[in-house]
Length: 137
Image (cartoon, rainbow, N blue to C red; front, side, top):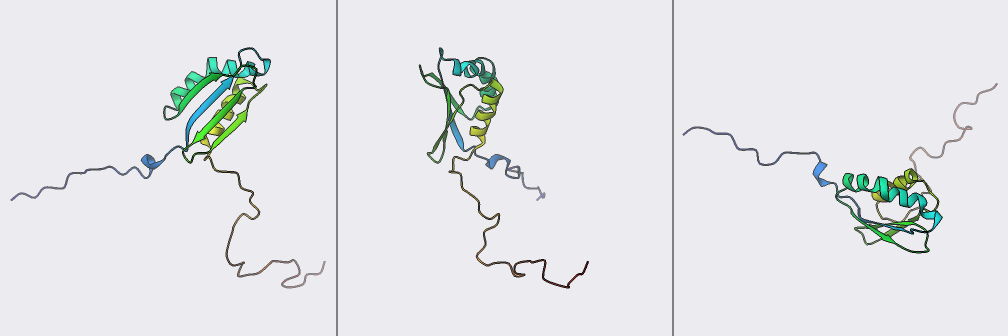
């Protein structure tokens, strides 16, 4: 009986296929008439098609809101929504805000008091310049 090797079934991708984008939908609200929506109208005309093509995993909706400032709303898979008002911004700045919402996790922002949280304090204790050998100048 001849010996044959096992056929390779799956290729390891080191977590590349495991990433799930947290943002599932971006809503762009604008006004045709108001001057504060000038940058948003330019963004929708020139930058949005390329942005949508680069992010096929996002659902993108565009809706007019007469007599309102332009807003971008992000909806996330955890159920939260984040909204950013983009009145009087240029189209490049609006693109940065859309990328910010796309890359956000949807979680509330937390104030960090200490960079590391630990149950026990440092083994060495608190450092002071008065510890150790005394130096005279």
